[in-house]
Image (cartoon, rainbow, N blue to C red; front, side, top):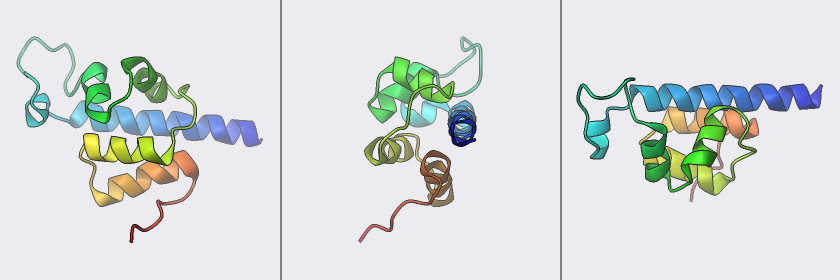
Length: 104
C-alpha cells in the first residue's frame, strides 16, 4: 500500500510539473517562441535549464520516475518556473505530503 501511494504521489507531481511547464510562455523566460514549437509552453530542456537540473532528470520527474526531489530542488523548481505561493505549497504537498516549512 505504501509503495502504491508513493507511485501515485510521483505521478501527481509529474502531472503538476507538466501543467506548469505547458502553460508557461517561453518568451516570459527569455526563450524564443513562435510557430516552430510543436507544443505550447516551455520545452523540457528549457525548464531543466531554468531549474538547474539535467534535462534527463527533469524528464524523469515529469514522468513520475525521477525519485524524490530534495527540498532544495523543489525550491529551485518553484523559483525557476516562477510558481505562485499556492503553487509552491502544492508542489511540496505533492512531493512530501505536507506544505513547506515557513521561512524565517
